[in-house]
Image 1 (cartoon, rainbow, N blue to C red):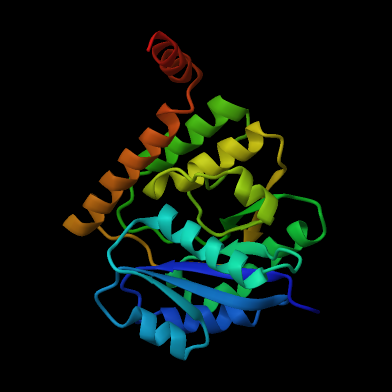
Image 2 (tube, one colour; image 1 turned 45 degrees about the horizontal axis):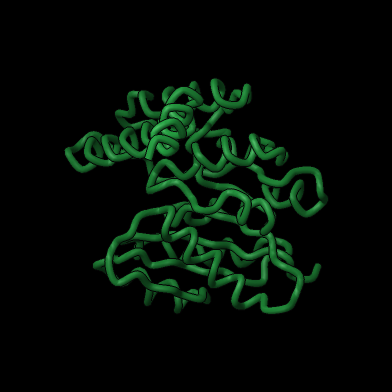
Amino acid sequence: MSGDTAVIIPAVNEADRIAATVKAAAALPGVDLVVVVDDGSSDQTGRVARAAGARVVRHSRNRGKAAAMETGAEAVRLLDEDATPRHLLFLDADLGDTAQAAAPLIAPVREGEADMTIAVFTTRVRLGGHGLVVRLSKEGIRRATGFDPAQPLNGQRCLTRAAFEAARPLAHGFGVETALTIDLLRKGYRVAEVEVDMAHRATGTDWRAQLHRARQLRDVARALAVREPVVVQNLDKLRHRR
């Protein structure tokens, strides 16, 4: 099969897992390009990813997940030049060997059955998560579109280039997945969930994990706020008064 898909992996301080993730992603059918966006890591993430065969783009400081996704997509666009645009498969850096199970995410996009696929992990590992952010995202998406996602925050997604461009600019930080789903559905793009046998490192219970969840909650809430009809209507009224 000729290459028609690029894998984009945002990564921060994942030197211990990035090599396995890159190698597994590169072996997926139809993947001929793996781009790792080193989002301001303080370890050797970029060097290890390059040694594993990835093209590496580095942010000098941490700019967040959405910015890393946009940087990776732009790198792919430049490499595509005048060729047919590749599909974009976004994977988390800590998937390790389980990234090899991502092929079912690509197939519906490649076959024209979906414009974006979202992974549903068949095996879920929990370490202290309270589900607040998931519920917020899930309910917000359902309220905005009628779609009831099983795992609304799952970052393993495959999109056509056209769908990705239609969703830009991406919502900030950890609000990106929630906003992607809402924006594409509202614009008439087809979104499908696909079960995959993948797993990433679970978030723990220490203060760093709690801070991570607080940031997730903040970013998802912001993404939903600007997409709520009442909020949008009020913003429009304010703009017209100026």
